Length: 379
Ligand SMILES: Cc1cc2nc3c(=O)[nH]c(=O)nc-3n(C[C@H](O)[C@H](O)[C@H](O)COP(=O)(O)OP(=O)(O)OC[C@H]3O[C@@H](n4cnc5c(N)ncnc54)[C@H](O)[C@@H]3O)c2cc1C
Image (cartoon, rainbow, N blue to C red; front, side):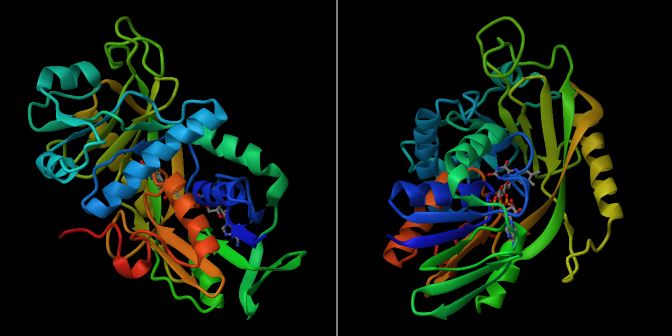
């Protein structure tokens, strides 16, 4: 049996440990804080299929199927059934990229239907689309279900160092333990690059701080819909979809938003973060307050169905690869594997599967090897 350590119990490490256990590996999962307390923190993420790189669309489509398997296995809804809406000039490009994927139902949304599904939104008659199988990821439920399943394999320790000590032998040192494994997988989010560097793997990860605010849905802002998965009101039982705005019409491009499961809260973020110094400190701490002001101003202009006074904040470090906002890559050598990227929540089941395959076969599957620059931006 392959003795494996996974470092980090965010959504990716949890998914990797789960996939490894399902394939018969002996797994120890190291986590220094609460599982899901890093970049995976907070309620709600968007599941969307549209990505510039068609190879990433294929990975995400595989992930959608695995999310369904998790829903069956854990007996809980993990992605809302209300779809993912996008507006702006980029809609036609997205639809073109998705066209070859018969398993991904998408369509244009006429203004009346857009308003019906997303009454929060100010008047918009430009391009709009619906990703039917997209939706809001129930992040807290996903982390809780996986954590519960893996509780017996979890070691609540901070990993200080990882290094190769021989053929198929990698040492992991924590505050109070020292163990060796056949294979170690680093899924430590912001902690991955420093640990990998100590073991001779150089990952070009850029670190920044990100902000997302949550707002209350005003009466009239809910979908024409019922209470089912999020969205009070009479009608069809439909809740609010997730939302991406690339239009620039409301003063920001690259806005994303997702409903909470209660249907009464909607979280909104700008695709912008503020960089960190090499020592880990924020280059400009005031930038987070400025991002908050911009987010509130956007909500006032674009989403009149929300009360513009934020009720909740998520502040979080994010890690990006230089080849794109959705870039993801795996580095793997002699018993040590490390994964890095951004916007990974939706892909977690497929990444977990791929990391397990890497450990058990010695080969990074699909297009995930970092040299393939998966998720690269076209521009
Ligand atoms: C506000 C926000 C909105 C987002 N929106 C989306 C979205 O809509 N769709 C989407 O798909 N993605 C989205 N993302 C990105 C997504 O959430 C992350 O890419 C994903 O959660 C990363 O998971 P991870 O497991 O790789 O990292 P993390 O969740 O950061 O997990 C790493 C874990 O490793 C632990 N750790 C670190 N160092 C050590 C160590 N030395 N020893 C032991 N443990 C260690 C940490 O405590 C942490 O729990 C968003 C992120 C944020 C912050």
